Length: 75
Image (cartoon, rainbow, N blue to C red):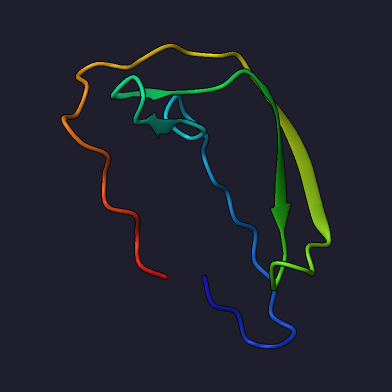
C-alpha cells in the first residue's frame, strides 16, 4: 500500500492456517512451527514503530505435498 506523506489508512491483514508455514526440504512438506511470532510494521526494516505478537500452534505437513519448494517472490 502506498500512502502520500501525512496520509493515513487502516490496513487489515488476515492470518489463516497458511500464514506462518514454510517448506521443509528435509520432509518435502509444508510445516508451521509452534511458537510466538513477532509482527513488525513500519516504513523500513530498521524502523518499525508498530509491533505485535501472535502465538501459533504447530501444524504438521499439509496436503497435498508439492514435489518441490515454490519459487520465492522477487523483491
